[in-house]
Length: 279
Image: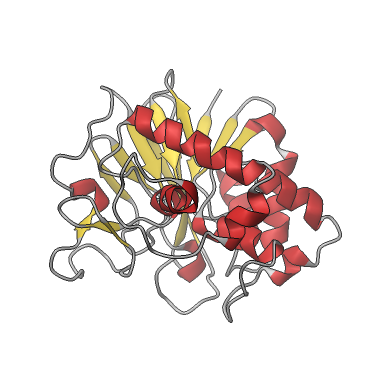
C-alpha cells in the first residue's frame, strides 16, 4: 500500500487528477492524505469535494482556512470575497451533503505507525503533540456538533494571539482553529502573528516562521509533520517537517510526497488562474 500526501488543491481538480494518474494512485489499495484547502480561488471546488468524499476511507483530509471560510459562508456567518469561487459549492444541488461531510473532517491526523502528523498550517510552538491532539479534538467536536452555527458566528478575528490553557469559550476555540489553519509566523515567545503572509526572509522584524521559534515543543522521536498553507514558503524539508503548498493556484505546481518508505516527491506544473500571491 502506498500513502501519498498532496498539498493545497484549492479547487484545481484537473491538476489533482493528473497528479494522481502520474503516481498511479489506486484507491483500492493506496491511501491519499490531503493537507487541507480543498476549495476556493480555483475553478473546480465542488468537483474536488465530490471526488475526495467519494474516496471514502481511502482518503483523509484535514481542514484548512479556505475550507473553514466555506463553512462559515454556508452558515451565513461570512461574506464571500471578490476572489472567492465558492458560490458554485453553495449553489450545488448536493451542497448540504458535501458540507455536512466537510465540517466533520479533522484538524489533525496522526499515524504513529507511519510516523507522520498532518495538519494544515503548523504546530503551535507551545503545544506538544498530545496538547495538539486534545485541542484538535475539542475544536472538531464543536465543528461537528450542535454548537457549529454559533462557532461560525464567533470564529473570525486574530485575538487572542497568545495561548493559555485557561482560555475558555469562543476565545479558546477561535485560537485553536487559527493555530491549526492560519498560522505562519509567531514572535519569539510563540504569539501568533497572523497579519503577514510573505516568504521567510521578507518578514518584519520580530516575525519568525512558526517552526523557528526558540524552545519549540519537541515532537516524539521519529515523527514528521506534514503541512501546507504557505505558498510563499513552498516545498520545504527539514528534520521533522515537510511543507507541500507549492502554489498550484498561482501557476506553480501541485506537489505530492509518498510517505511510506523512503520519502519521494512528485510535482506537476499547474496552469494557474490567479495573480501570483500568497495561498
